[in-house]
Length: 531
Image (cartoon, rainbow, N blue to C red; front, top):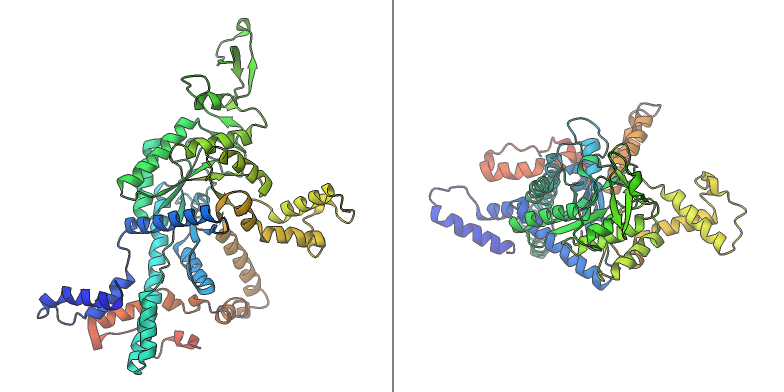
């Protein structure tokens, strides 16, 4: 319903009680309804799932229509991202939020900072989803509230043209609510545990859940060593558990991202149960690093399998983990990806050790031989040294092309000495176009940075501490923070408004009329920022 229709609907609800509901105004009710469009997390999940599905279809038609997100660890961070996106680009289209399990572990656990090993509380992730959407809903309420105030001012001034323009903008208002890609790690237990937690995610508003094929109780960060994968059937059971959770809650087009860590995972905890030669379990086992054994040499405690009619002993570590053959990571990633897409997943995530379009695209091309519309979510990770990686890629490309590289030392390409060089400039240009190029050449539908605000918070705090506690004193804050907020039009320079003070004043006026004691009067120091 548009603005006038919402007022009419509210008036219809009030009319039968006109003699007792005194002071209840239909337009005030309409405004509150428009400021609270989403009444539950399930409303949000259903709404955002449709957005994400439409974006996926648009990407299939044109790879230039890829999407992006940035990781969050607090509702305010997510809110500011979307406010900034609307401010700078006029729309949130194609921009999501990413919820990183790494950041929840490092910044939100009651145990204190933890590594990315699924040791944090399960529900801290679903709690953060709910918190993010609470802040995004408040961003809507704040922005609409300011539009309502402008409408009142235009009416008071008798400016019908401006009033009509503002009402048109209200009728076509774009919400800050966007899809969240939510990280459920390896599922925090067995398939039943995954199902129960997935329901919490969805009830909080998640339309997209990302799950990885590591062993839940051995889970490691995707960019660290010691990763252990599970057989496909174990992983597929968890994918099915997430799908059942979506369908049970009526989010029929919920999105599942199947992540494979096989490229950097050289270990498995189990030998897969195989029913017949060549099945998925047999293919998983075929990557095990084995030695052929003579039956006479078998000793107590040996674990044996047969392969091509031969008796084989898989290499087993003292940790009771089994080892894969070196160099099989890409083949395992391709098999993982195909199997996941054939059994309920919608998108892939291949965790890599470097941002290299050729490497990613090579695997995607193999996957697309079986699943033509396969597409990826890709981690543009801060765990990569982007500057060094791309300078090395340019250096190696120049060597291959026969270009003179005598002015450069490959061992020290990170040096500031190379910042203003031709090689440095070409590397930076490749970084700038990486997402666009990878979307076109490597099947990447969604680009995200997992931990950006972890790093930006550290950098900005370091800069402020150096100035404020040093010679600059208060000027360190004023020049480096507040003056920049004013000059750049950062909304939270009016932090009282951002925290909901003006929304509260509007409600006071609805509830108490002329008797309302409002905070936004002439003595409010936020008025100093009116200019």
